[in-house]
Figure 1 (cartoon, each protein chain N blue to C red):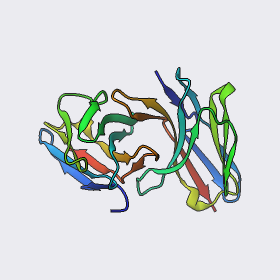
Figure 2: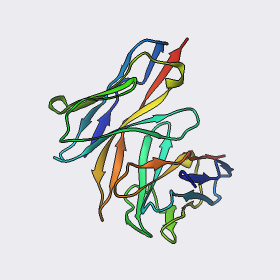
Figure 3: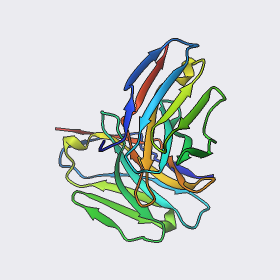
Figure 4: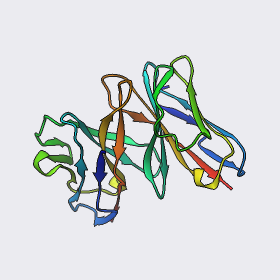
Length: 112
Length: 117
């Protein structure tokens, strides 16, 4: 596609359930990022992929959070045993060496 | 650690007024990039500008202009003759190198701009 695509756009889940958020980056972009945007914390970096490897996972808030990327393309962010404080908008971005980061529209996660 | 401060939480202006959004940053890097992004109600972050730390020339793009002052660690954004469509949250960001190459963006808390008729 022309831009970064994220799905679902909205997700409501019960506390304790696992969720998977998907990101389709711009074709050819080797770098992929996940950010979280919440009211109290602003925009926080979660994880960075270069190709399929994640050299920097420093922003993942707990071991309930994990992410993978396959084929140098699609990425999935998984949150296990969701908690109410996980409620936020999860944003994905991609870039190549010579461009700025392009962001998707995000997935709004609500944990009830 | 890197830090970006946008002291203005919310600004309201009347259409056609000029408005300046402030951004102050902290970094120990000698080479860095500064960015401005716009986030309309749809939620997507829209890139506006990237500025290299070695280039202190001000930039103008239509009604938008940016003032980069290294001496005061500021990168302010001015919208001239504001329009209702400019209403959005604006984020200033600073690049920070990551392990394994690449970089991440450290964002300010954003400024909500409301332009009214």
